[in-house]
Image (cartoon, rainbow, N blue to C red):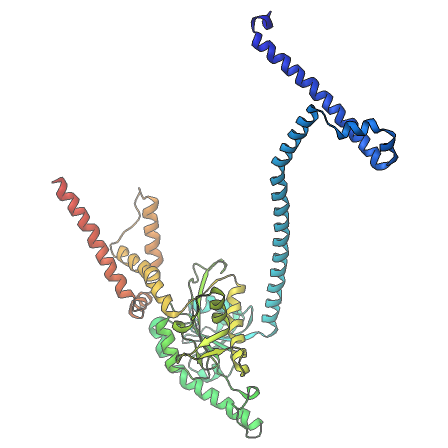
Amino acid sequence: DYCSCRPNIRLVLLIVAAIHLSTAFIMSETSSSSSFVGRVHADPSASQACPTKRRKLDTPTTTTILSSSSEEEESSNNAPSVVVAGKLEELKQREAELASMLAEVRREKLSTLRSRPLSIGVIGFGRFGQFIARSFQKYGRVVVTSRSDYTDIANAMGVTYVPLATPEVFLEQDLDVIVVAVSIMSFEQTIRDLVPHLRKNIESRRRRLETAEGGGDASSDYGSVIRGPLIVDVLSVKEHARQIMLDLLPAECDILCTHPMFGPDSGKDGWTGLTFVYEKTRINQVVLDPRAEDTSSSSSNKNNMHNEEFVDSSGTVHSVHEDSEAHVEGMDRMERFLSIWEEEGCRMIPLSCRDHDAYAANSQFVTHLMGRILGSQGLSKTPIDTKGFQSVLKLIDGTTADSFDLFYGLYKFNQNSQNTIVNLREAMDEVVEKLRQMEQKEG
């Protein structure tokens, strides 16, 4: 009765039944065909014994054509997935191979670093000096010096302490690298005090070598070259430190300008992911001029220029692979020191001192400036603090925890800082003026 009342539904039911019967027939034919094809492959004579069956397979009916078309459509729909899956597997395999190669290179690099450990001196064994010396001692011998007596702390850390009052004893430790970890305000005087002792130490070593070689010239070939230690600064301002070291240090001393953009607080849980900025300033008396470093628009040439060539102030290009092996040795010593920061997980940023100071004025200095300005208002916690206000209080605490000497040094020794102050004043005046204009419109 239901079907007689609904002729359209009855027609649909008939069509569905026909489809089911057709599907059952096709499946049985496919099954028998598959078994027959299997027998043909197993026994070629089977195709000759059953010609009718062979013709039936070679001449499909309309139904099988529809089925084949449906299968092709399904196959075409699945094909991209198969290709993507295969490509993904290939890429994952390549990724694993590259990861394995990288791990092997890192192990080899670390082995090379430890095969010739550096002797590192640290001038200034205050909070930051202790912070970096603790990591340095994992990679080589560390000798520290400071005005205050830190013998107990040094012994507990496993490093050697020498009083700053005896710089000649400090330099007699045969140091490969000297890190000057003093404040911005005392940096220039520290370098000036160190230079006479450096010159005396270098000359003393030269005389000893000449005597040992029977009066020969100690600078005649690489085997007899007397080089001073690599001098490294860690100041928050870079052009100031760079110029002082170039002006004052003996030519025998290589120079590396660096800025670890973290300290004992932000790096207390390790240095992984923390930013380390550096400029290779002088190697074997060749001064790198960052302004002339890039002479090509090609990125590959830029990388090659940065890694393997130096341009001095006269515009002459020097390769680290040129005849004098002192270039290679100087670069190797510098790379070994930089590798310590790399192995500790730092994000390494090669950057000219000039560009560093331009960036720092609009990031580091403005942060300290705002922290000091807001801190001078006496802001404190309230029962209804928002997340934004809590961030303001953190900014105040973070910036005012540093000495005012540091803040003053960021201002005095970065020529971009005054522009930052002027821009901040203008921006504040602009915002206040907008408020007044809106107020006047309402009035």
